[in-house]
Length: 440
Image (cartoon, rainbow, N blue to C red; front, side):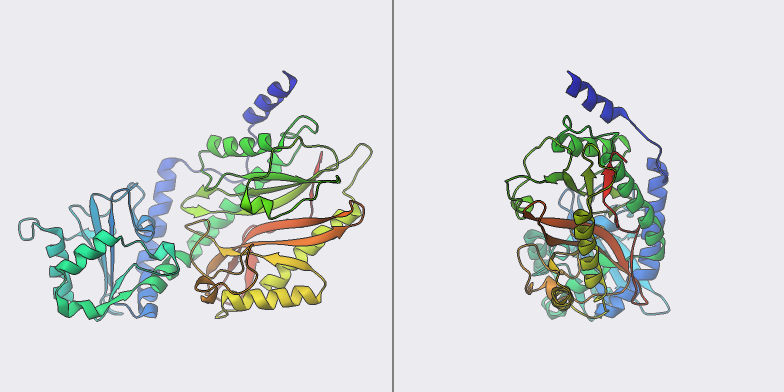
């Protein structure tokens, strides 16, 4: 009964947060303002960079292209029947024309361009527009390496090609780079908001890793996981993956970090002397966070974290620096990984790096910088270059031998960061530099 009462109490405790959580109406306004800014000011630059003067995005209700999902206005929770978006670059003076071959305007951003009286067939309406605009290249979302940029389904592709006159077929190109650029690039307005989103996520972790939630000897790792899930729901937010909370401790059992990737760690009662680790992320205003942090449960009589754990944590922080110091525009993910691992090895750090882009998706489009099960080259996404104004989850671990525990401990860290147009890297809301103590 005591344990049940504690868990119930921990779920209803709601502290004040430093960041205001917007109402649904307020969120909609922000989403639409950001989307209008991106389409007006960002999209033309990206289309010209990709040398694509017409971008056609096709999706059906409940099976939307991932890129299309990011272009829908706030009140459109899905496409309507079949929705076709056509973006035509008319040059510096006239900008990008935004049309929808659909029965409706797509919010205020894309004007509906389908006269059923003239063209009862939707594909005929699309072909008519293509003939009139006569683009040099027609970009479609198909990609070998990026699921985010591979949203054109087999059926829609087949139907489109059947209707498109043969003389236009050679103009079709993959819009993979354009789609990835659209998804990975963050605007100034987005980055102001992103800092607030990362802070909310950090504050949830800080509360979860406190004696407001954890009672040593009673609370389990699974209790903390579900507290985090419930907290996110109570705040009116969402998670994009089920959180993880696990333990490393002094005991005969060897902790293998690979378990945390191949399968979820088993539920354990949290005890004094435990080093806790969490993996947690939220979704808010169409942006995602992904963070991993640590906490230590003080033993009776302890007033601070053992020095051997403090030193181990410092190696994790230094591994972060070895990685981000190698962030240079134009370098591929594979090159950044190799240089960071070389540098950390010279400094005596046994590191594993598996960093990924973040933004509209948790595991987002952009350069892959290592994988937990592959510290060599990643063909495809690893060959993609680092671009300015892009965000990343700096995810990695440093394996440190702890003589006092007679085992290796892994400091597993993940923090969200931003690489700006001047070539500088910063953590969006800082990073954990000290292990949380429980109790504080």
